[in-house]
Structure formats: structure tokens, C-alpha cells
Amino acid sequence: MRLYKNPTSPFARIAHVALIEAGVDNLDVRVVDQWADPAELLAVNSAGRVPCLVLDDGTAIAECLLIAAYTEQLRQAGSDGAAGWDPACLSLTGTALGVCDAAVQTMIGRRILSGGFQDASFDGQDLGRKRRRAMIEGLRVVEAALAGRDAADLDLGLITAIVALDYVDMRFPAADWIPPTPHLRGLRDRFADRPSLAATRPPS
Ligand SMILES: N[C@@H](CCC(=O)N[C@@H](CS)C(=O)NCC(=O)O)C(=O)O
Image (cartoon, rainbow, N blue to C red):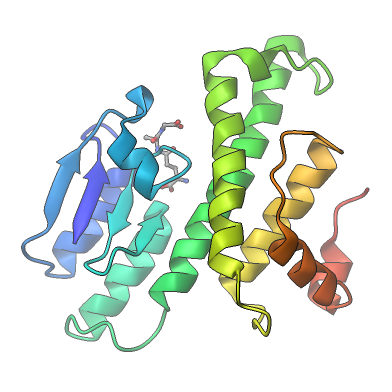
């Protein structure tokens, strides 16, 4: 397994400590500068953030608590990872969380800069552009992961993906940069009447 990290990041440290505690040996630790957007990091995490854990089969899991959940299961299963979280579900969840976070941070950036949400000058700044790219690429990765999953269960990955799409649609209505996500939109429609999603849907 390979862990992308930066030594100052508390999130990356949580993931790294969890991996050590789980007894993962021969971990390939790659120190990267997440602010320089290295291609090898963007290739595994569309949000361009550390930490990101890449499993031996290439499945990439972002978000320290998802990595910690995965490693906890490794620890409990004596390293065969048999039970518990499906790595593909964790991977989808992490990518979709990256979309949520990039969208939320865009709104926070606007608010810091102008005191409100309407002035979008933040979006044109370096960090704003990185957040926009994270939303676009993250939605593309989510869409690719969901392609062919027509009979999907509403697992944590799909919940997070639907929540991310709803949030992007709410905050950036009809934005022309939002990539096409027919599978995700179809699954969102399919689960539209699910009480959990219906009761918590944001205002349109
Ligand atoms: N929610 C993420 C946060 C990860 C995060 O914000 N990492 C920082 C380093 S401390 C990063 O990569 N920042 C680059 C960026 O935000 O673009 C997690 O729990 O892993």
C-alpha cells in the first residue's frame, strides 16, 4: 500500500498512525506538497489533498477517517481485510466528500473575502480554482465509479455522492462547468423518495 502524506498535516498523521497501529508493514510512504498539485497525487485524489491511501489493487481512499476505518478493519481481521468496509465504497465516499468539501470551502472563501455568498471573486483565485477543479474532477470520478451500478444499494458511498450533487446543484445552480453525471443523477432520481434523503434535502 502507498500513503500520500505531508509531514505537517494532522489528517495525514491520523491516517499514518492508524496504519502503523494496524501493523501494516512495507507501507510505501510518499511525501508530497499538496499545494503544488503534483500529478501523482491528483491521479489518486481529485481533491488534491493528503492523506490518500492507495491499496495494492489501485483502489484509492481519501479522507483520514475513512483510511482509519479501513485500517481498523485490517487490524481486527489480522490484515486480510475480509470483513467490514468495502474498499470501493470507501473510495467513492472519500471522493464524494472531497466534492462536498471543495464546494463548502468555495462558499467559505467567498464569505471570507466579501462577507457573503454572491460575490464570486474567490472562485478566480488560485485556491478557488483548485476547489472548482476538485468539484469537477471529483464528480467525474464519482460518475465513472457509478457507471454500471444501476441496481445500487444506498450505501455510504452513494449517500455521499447524492449529497455532494445536491449541494453543488444548490450552491451553483445551472453552472455551465458542472460535468454531466447521468448515472449519478439517475440514481438520485431513483432514491428521491427514500425517506432519509427526502427528509433532509436542502432547499432548492
Ligand atoms: N477532510 C480531509 C482533510 C484533508 C486536508 O485538508 N488535508 C490538507 C493538508 S493538512 C490538504 O491536503 N490541503 C490541500 C488543500 O486543501 O488543497 C481529511 O480528513 O483527510
